[in-house]
Length: 279
Image 1 (cartoon, helix red, strand yellow):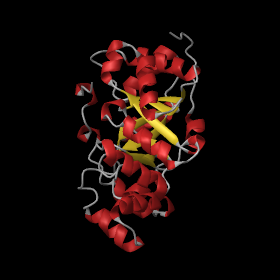
Image 2 (cartoon, rainbow, N blue to C red; image 1 turned 135 degrees about the vertical axis):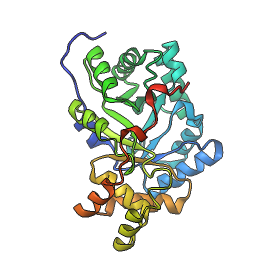
Image 3 (cartoon, helix red, strand yellow; image 1 turned 180 degrees about the vertical axis):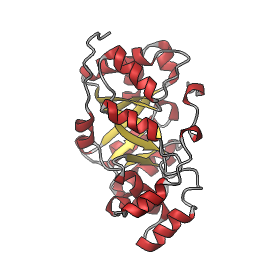
Image 4 (cartoon, rainbow, N blue to C red; image 1 turned 60 degrees about the vertical axis):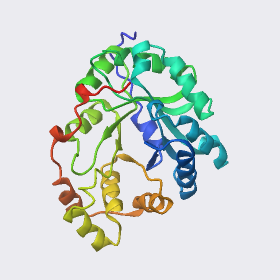
């Protein structure tokens, strides 16, 4: 394990490499997942997000192959599941994911959940860095990490994750985690960026949407983009996929952004990472 306490960060490099918005694939499987990814790529998505625990890497891989796009035009993310943290077979887990995806490397490999109860995330991250150094991964990151998890993994390995992908929407702005990411030079991605329905139905989002001639989802995604965050949004509907991606062309005023910021319910509304058990 690395003993050098000098932190190595890759935020600027991964920011430059990341497309502005990602296409999520959970909970789609089989032909539905393949169809969704193909329609997303046709709409213009170039960041495709999956995970071992989703059980759809093979279906995503079919879509990547059938898309006909050159490999270097796609940015593919997958995540290591809890069982593989427990076993310690990180390279084996990655190789299985690569086989399912039909790829020789992934662009971003994330620890899906810290799972502090098993206390393996620093060792897992160290092994993932070795996979990167072997050419199997471009960037190594984490998902659902809190500030103290970042502190620990950086202290143990001497390197900061390139990305921390967190649950985030205007009602769950995750200010403490985003501040920790920024302090450590970690780029923020968001999952479930549209919330669970209440945000899209809020008078704030609907009023802004009506005024700027957009959908509520586009307004919320534009809020993420204005914060410098790359949202990973899931939709299997080709029309909605295209609508969501068009949020990159929407500019919200400072007043609009402040109104959306006021929807934040605070960190206590987030899922309890310490209690999560994803295997």
